[in-house]
Image 1 (cartoon, helix red, strand yellow):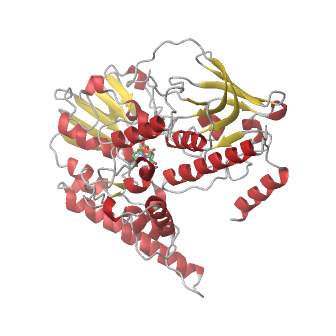
Image 2 (spheres, rainbow, N blue to C red; image 1 turned 90 degrees about the vertical axis):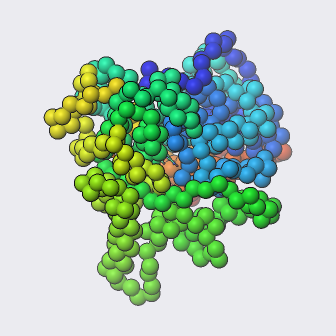
Image 3 (cartoon, rainbow, N blue to C red; image 1 turned 120 degrees about the vertical axis):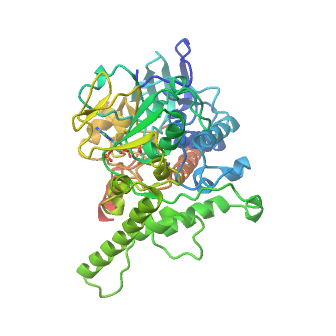
Length: 496
Ligand code: NAP
């Protein structure tokens, strides 16, 4: 039941049997962009298949109060120029991102043929027909010339295995399935039904910190169960300047994405256009100062000092914003900057000054959960609702597990079998023995990765669109990666 879709009712439909040009698994950023670029390439019959009830991927599921993207909206929302859209704020809300992805999908005619609330059970390449044969959990049998896996990196929710959690008699849900029927309200609006409720928030990662302020505002009491404190840097969100778009010339979004990337890669730039926590702290820690002739000891010391300075800044911020010194002490991140995914927020720390918010420090986790709620250090907390902000399976979860179905290529060999000892690909997007298959870039599959996932999706989708356009022009029925190309790419990955 933790997986059920609280946002869109599942509607019965007869199974679909058909033959299309492309099946794209996943209707999030990567899938929508792949679809849009395939349309540009002149491909007509495109079917997106997604377990969600609509477009958006991670932004479909994650609708918890306060959900926003930490990457600047002007480089995170794709196709801004094409859709002539200017994000309302420097950092966009989940609703704005999801609505924008829907607009891209609508613009490119990807919605009407999509099969939502549908999971793929199995996909197998058939050499004879030159088709992928795809079976779904709704009884569909799809055949397609190309198969695009755009399954995302945050699609497998993680619930902690806390002993007794199934005995809890109150309500509970994961942040990726926020239950507004229980909490009242809607994304961006106050939670109206929590005034008499005691809420436990488990998890203080990028998600937990974003939903605390709304919970603090609405609930009778919120207990925040923290295992490890996050480093919470300045967010500095603000409305987009009215004259922002006037300053832009064609190609500005790509230039801005490249500018961000250059800063993150430690390359010299005239101006840091994004100018935020990622480009200040993250980039700095990735590229500590070094000069010719420097000893490794001096380099390491310099790196540590730089890191320590940044973490001290974060610890001072906690001291400045949290009134109670004992609470502040526990909220201070005590590790090096990249030990945990850095966070950015301007209201999270202040929420601990509210009388209805209590921080429960539990470095070893919650002892157990009883019918009444969590127990920590022998203390029983009486709770009406547990919100699990406990994240997702790590990004490095193998693709075939994230995809959730068997992908079978030539000679009956599955991708799981082929990649048993690690991925083997060309560009992290195609793999020998799996003809006409594209995998959108993601970590752990020899693909290029970066903090701005959207840029990867943009580049990956353009590659898919252009490659398919070329194959169509040359009337190629089935392409495969040569053994040499795959070996060369793998070697390149190992070398770098
Ligand atoms: P997360 O970073 O994995 O954090 C999960 C939290 O749950 C951590 O605080 C973790 O504690 C805690 N936890 C896990 N198991 C627990 C247990 N048994 N008992 C107590 N606490 C437990 O998950 P997330 O916050 O959902 O973020 C996941 C990823 O989503 C991020 O890395 C980011 O890439 C993305 N994200 C981005 C944004 C954004 O752009 N604004 C927002 C949300 C999410 P420990 O730290 O001790 O493990």
